[in-house]
Image (cartoon, rainbow, N blue to C red; front, side, top):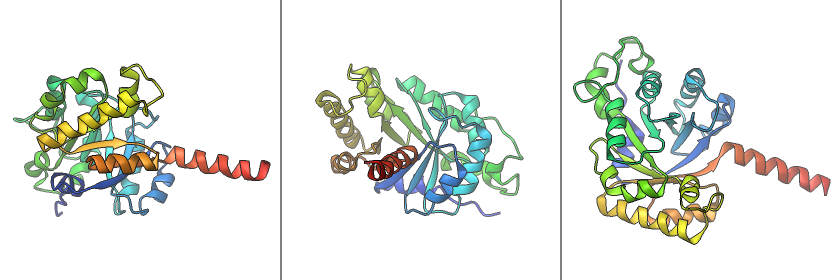
Amino acid sequence: MEFTPNRFKQRLLAGELQIGIWASLCSPVAADVLRDSGFDWMLIDTEHSPNEPPDVLDHLRTIEGGTAEAVVRPAWNDMVLMKRILDLGARTLLVPYVQNAEQAKAAVSAMRYAPHGVRGVTGGGRASRYGRMKDYFQRANDDVCLLVQVETGEALANLEDIAAVDGVDGVFIGPADLAASLGHIGNAQHPEVQAALRDGVERLKRLGKPAGILTPNEDEAKRYIEWGFRFVAVGIDLVLLLRAADALAKRFKA
């Protein structure tokens, strides 16, 4: 069986802008609706959504063949969680709450087989098409893509050290947790938070490291793209449903 390269990683390293959507409804049906909408990537969340490995598997099967490449966020920077998600066939992970270079190195190690890491080996996982992909082990280390999530003032202070870790392919700056860390919980639009976001992306641009972000606000998303963020999630499935449903009810109940 032929090995198919990671399209998201290829485009990320080429510096292309990739527009994404957040899948948090725990619904493969919703993911099926979104997969052909034209988004470049879709985030399957297990940190703030009650998705478990079987749910992730259903999402991966559903998304495959659509316009969006799958990105999975494990619940934590944990080698066991990451191993299980990788074995299911995920190739790009967004690891939350990376605070320093040592934690970034741990995430890199969890993504890779020995001697370059500690990922456990199975010959029958979905990632290798249950063993049919004969060159999987020779190519997997180079094909996986690691995005690390920087979301506190402490992490931003360590940004250069984190981004410089070999094997970190992109850095995602989380506005909501960053706002909380800076004393502005629930207000990512606060000038101090916005200044920190802009400073972060400028520093990453100087390092040549792709930066990512999420916002369901279209004006914000356009501004972030202008600032230089290269993988940008511009919507959340739950928020899209919420806004549309509330607006529809309001029009008829007014």
